[in-house]
Image (cartoon, rainbow, N blue to C red; front, side, top):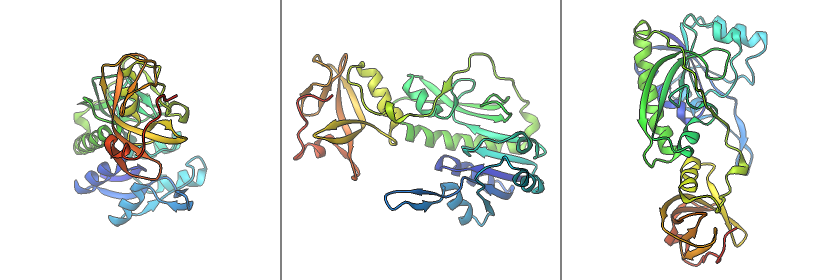
Length: 297
């Protein structure tokens, strides 16, 4: 097929690679524009932008697709289908209607559960045992379109980074499967009972030790590796990337031993942490010369 690919972060790269490897004609890649990032505020391109150029593909990065000129440029490509994976911009109706087979999206959950911006993180946080990927036909509503393929994935104790990587690989394979024979997968209307995966807010990244240990442990995995859940010690933010739930009975935030913190019920034993400006380290590495205070608030 003649394809327009639309994606931005690393999550979308496996789908781009799979579509190219399957022999489809990727006429153009759309991605978000470069943005200032890091301390030096140098412009940083998206992971898809870098990968598309490495593959020798044409790249466009409009700030918006709402103006008539951008929509005309998109339609002029004459695509059979637009393959979308975490593009990050709203697609207005003229864009959705332009490809012959519409716009087909790789969504990181088992719809209708977890429509919205952070499906991987919210599935972990909620304690879901299973999540997955849905290949869906896009329409104007937020992740409301009909489903084409669904694949389940066990969450186990994966963090958001690990789970997103697995979902991306499964989603890439499912998208190529659909592209090979769209008629094999008639659209299925989503059932009732949608839940919404709100965007991660900075305010929820600080650890609340008054919560029960299971809730906190899930939150850690949902936020790892980025933006990361954190606590403050000696005026410094420490990201807590991974921890084990253990028994413990003390006031929330009490440091029971060198690396075990009391929660509202139970306790967390720190496993993997990260200090500002440094890489991930074990709790033992942290505690060499950095003793935690007796109480974390």
